[in-house]
Image (cartoon, rainbow, N blue to C red; front, side):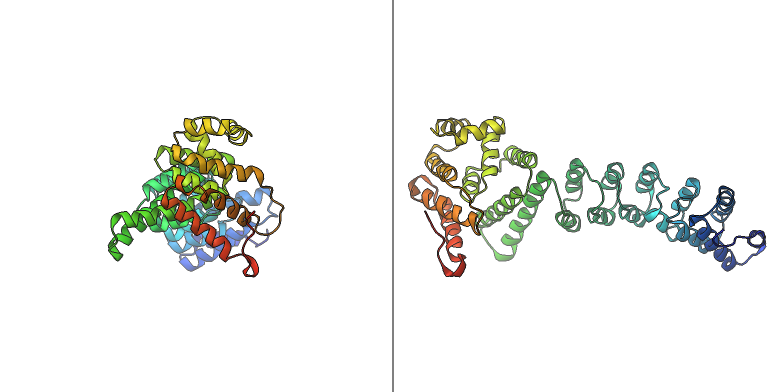
Length: 377
């Protein structure tokens, strides 16, 4: 065997009363069982000894065993379960690393174990949805924070949604969710909304703002964030996000117009499809057909304000006239063109929207390279 576990060692293990000696031998057995060159007979002998050590009255002996066997594929499952159910000092190494434990074992620990044990489970690589669901539904806040920071954990969209609901008052959980590399668009949109509500309350309380002023600030911040999220979303994610916003009354004509004018064509198309209750592909055809009869019909079916039609048509005209050449600042040049065209119809645009678009146009001009104004053609 790689570390010689002799008959003398076994006899010493059974007879020696010193916990230090038993812990030393436990480490030796663990090293043996973690080796790759054991025969079948040697594995069985080591496993028999491990079962004895796992019942030792001294924590230090059991802890030595747990640390040494945390990565061993030869650790018997019954011993792994016994160590996992032990006190935290003994259990945590096996809970964090042992691949012998099944999803069923891990779910049981999550449901009935301590907060530290839940955290150990949450830190494991490649957690399955059955385990992450259990953590979201039963674990305490610290473990869910660890879970959300675990990049390899598989978390279902519904799991994220339940986590947002259950930990709505936990800044740590929400921050950990926001910092994940990827989130479903619907979950990201909901988180944006929650942060905006907190910001509104803070502004009104700390700066003595009127509620309507705070609401205006929050709406602008929220719409900016939602638009940034949508630019990186897949077609399905974007459609789901827009549908959720529509259900919650947040898919406003103002937001739709601003999205179109700032270059988020995908958001505009998805919004018109949802509000008009037509498939996305149909909406895209109706929006971009040359006569604009399709756009007008969809606009009315979507119950958009009649006064905005001229601005929307002008923006779509620019979209269909513009081809991106791949050069730097393509999007900025497009924005300057569409906003300039729409603002010629200022009488049809709400003052707040006109002010917003003027601000966006100003940003384009101010940040043009070399101090030159972006070309408006």
